[in-house]
Amino acid sequence: MRILVAEDDRDIAAGVCASLQRQGHAVDHVGDGAQADAALASIRYDMLILDLGLPSLEGTAVLQRLRQRGDSLPVLVVTARDGLQERVRTLDLGADDYLIKPFAVDELEARVRAQLRRVTSNGQPELRIGRLRLDLPGHRVWMNTDPLELTAREFGLLSALATRPDRISSRAQLVEALCSWDEELTDNGLDIALHRLRRKLRPGGMGIRTVRGLGYMLEEAAE
Image 1: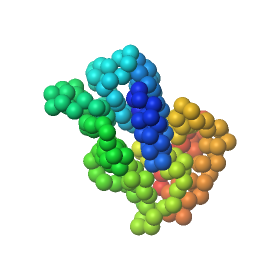
Image 2: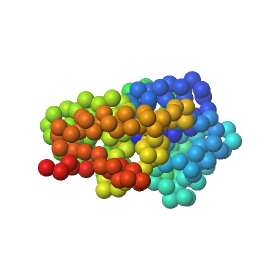
Image 3: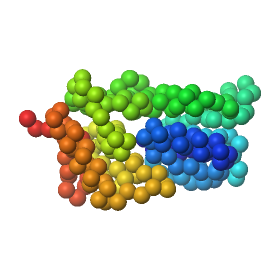
Image 4: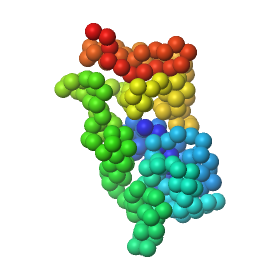
């Protein structure tokens, strides 16, 4: 999953980003509201973690603009503003959850998992494709009933394919899903990840089909 963190406190941002990256997410960080608004308008994210007290453009304005564009992206507001009226107003503007600073990292991670589970599996605890079962927020995969051991990159690649069932994912889309702004993934690196994931999926009857010139699809392998 690719997550945008909009937070102007560098220490808090560093901790949040590190926590999310340990969970296998690709994370981008911006320090002001104008940058957040521009990123959200041009890049497809799976979630936004939003501070309200951002310079340049208030967090509430970022949220309003996002919803005015018709974007249903999950938004977790993380802020020191703990007044009841502020919480009610922010939720009414379209925030999905509200976490008050200071917070425990475990609680942040749990709230992120809850939001991602809601949008990636229609509220169900697992996503099922063929013989695969995926708990995307929990970063767990089973082939039939057997756990499937994947690296963070392999899991990210599988997630990107699994959340686009019956659709082709281009190389650019896969790279975008796997990398944050400060990371790079070469063509060779993507090919290696695809090869290793295919090898792990094959014994369970799943495969990744190459659609020449277009991209890749996750599918059940032919008997």
